[in-house]
View (cartoon, rainbow, N blue to C red):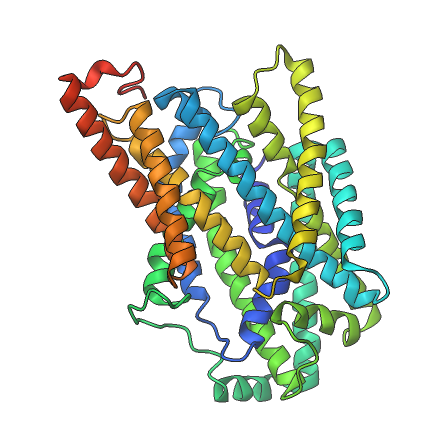
Length: 439
């Protein structure tokens, strides 16, 4: 597939419903501003690293999933653990996405229960994935990107016609909505320059460098150069797009003034779409949001489970298994969406927190694979320590989520290297592991 289509697919995948709904709410909320873009700077830096360093790895041999690289280096147990963590993370993140889409439907059809909307959306998502597969998903995402960017621009134009661009900028400036940088070293603050640059880089190295959901798209191109162009171009597009959605949040702040028609930031843009956009434009934006809901990770989950966690006898059995897994994973995502509807946290915060919690140790074990002494035992010890460390940081401290991936990956790398060094010292030779130094 052409690199520009893959770039559009990456942007559509990364932004999806969560961005469309949550990011305007970040700038609209009390105390909200543009500091979220500091995290996006890390997104761009990580993409350059992925293009230069990671991409050649993906095109060596015939990969089905990125986790096969871990089997080559460490053996099946490490690959199975990384693949299982991926499946868990994507199930939770896509459950959040279904919930946000259901909020839009509820804003339009107040009589429809959110849980009913989640189940209906999930059922359509499952059928769509079963019929289309990854190629259909990529091309739908290209069209979807055009639709929802067009819808967002249309919403911004309508807002500017209502409030006036100069007035919106003046109101936003008075409320410090355009504040961009925060150079404080406070680890409890979510959006600072350091958490954005460092945490955003580590998070994106994990989500875009070791996550099958994204790597699956790179492998749809024909060469590393094309995939590298796609991932770098997507970073530039995402930076511009996030800035646009934050500015929509400022326009919403100027439009509604002191009155707050909703209780949660995630609900402000759906409220505007349902109640204040002209009917035709409202339909366009809703169509974009519903299209985004169909861009699921079910295909990536199925390929990961079949290729990394099961051993089907032949391609026919693999296809049957993948269809069953798509249905089961879809049901699990529906259950997550229903369970999370009582949460008062931003959906974007939930999704990125989960990704940072789980993907950090996966990134760490990829780092560990680049060292010479690492073995299967040291990789498992490192990942276990990384998961424990990041869980303790997340649940027992007030450390902000951008640091989770940093903690998880570095603890995994450090403990893995120490374990390998101790094991090597005891055995007298680092070649005792059957998987030592494979590349």
